[in-house]
Length: 208
Image 1: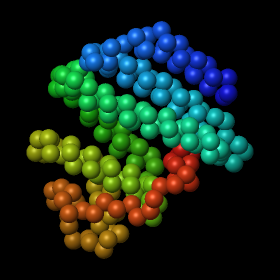
Image 2: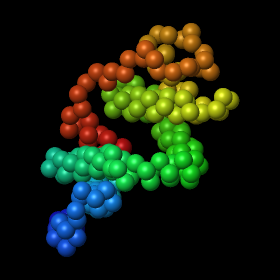
Image 3: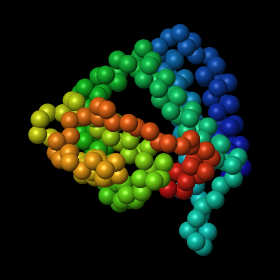
Image 4: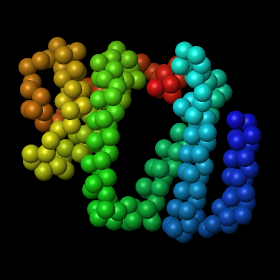
């Protein structure tokens, strides 16, 4: 692990010295190039340290130190920040608008099929509402579907996971009178995780 990490750091230094340091980031295309290069490095570092790439012990568990957890968290944070920076780029805003309007319709449907499949394979993500991490993930899924629903044509099928998430939340809150098919939006719904995410929650997420 140490050797790979040092190699990745050296590779990043080479790219920075030979190419990235010479880019004029006032030029939108060059700024986008810089962002994508940094994003690729963050993604590689995240994958390098992710527990899923390691051998589990006899009980099937994978343990990481707090230092390793911090590396993973920082890499993930950098990745998200750079993705956001990419979308805000003047160059990127035009190309992403073109791509999403022309080529990515099927990709969006595929993404929701994958999300639905994830919840099907891991029903605990829906059932264990007392788990703050799972509950927050469900909230994000519902918020994403609300944004999706607003641009769908009438008659489009609601993913099973969305119906189950809403149903579970109504049961938990004691409200069972609203029919699932009558969902019109998230207005008025209180998305409150209830606890701060500490290193233990992050470790749970990594093991999942």
